[in-house]
Image (tube, rainbow, N blue to C red; front, side, top):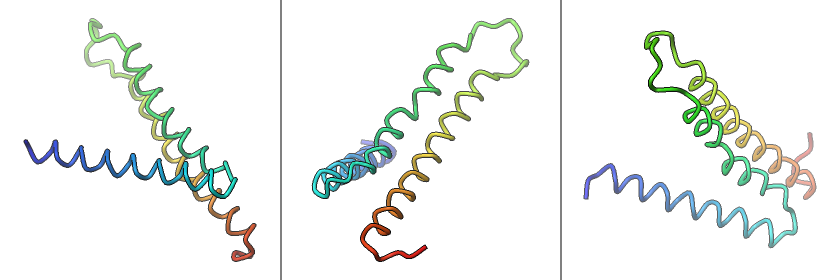
Length: 103
């Protein structure tokens, strides 16, 4: 097995364990706000997939650029950054509820 494939398998395992821990901690503490992070990362690849399907690979103007694909990548990046921000906000709210963080 190639080293790249082992890396992908290891990273997917870590991602699955991370999602499992977020879901379990949400159920354990009855605070379901961190599930927004999971939902954001689940829907993050959708704009890239949709815009990739809408782009016409048989276009007669090859050097005109791929604005549709670039827009899909932009939306995917925005959702990933928004997921990280949602995680930060949910952790801050959780610490604020516990009284450990005074802002």
